[in-house]
Amino acid sequence: MLLAAGHVFTKATNQQSTELVWTGPTTPFVSARRTEQTLLQVINAAEQTLFITSFVAYNVSTIVKALNAASDRGVVISMLLELSQDHGGSISFDAIGKMSTLVSAARLYSWRDKAAPFSDGRVHAKVAVADGKMCFITSANLTGHAMEQNMEAGVLLTGGQIPKLLLDHLQALVDTKTVSPV
Image (tube, rainbow, N blue to C red):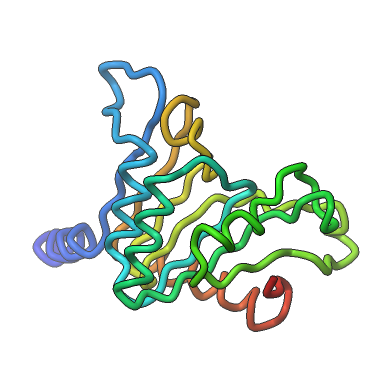
């Protein structure tokens, strides 16, 4: 029984890895795996699909460059962002309009028609999922400050069920028209 348990543990460990990501002041207790490095890893790992959500997006030239390179590789990029106030959202900056010019191949989505319990809700999730095989769940928005200066925390999951479940959830939001193309 102990051998079987050991085998199952080893197999599960080899199927999924979890890494802590931290941007900001460091201590000897947490390694400084930066947000930008991790997001670039997820983008560069994508072979077929990449789905990113963020509240805002601006001043992220390295991320934009990586997204366009992914698109050039044939990766289908989907992004869910918060609408600007001019378009019924809550932010003053039109992140969707800006992203549509910077990453023209991206499929952009917004959460426009919100059901009653979510009528004042925001797109506040910050995740990136590559091919349902790797996902980055973070506190960081797609901003220069979040990539380099803010204190941000996240986890990078490679393998296992969570990346696939997260991608399936995001795709279901699109398929059920909970979020809509912009």
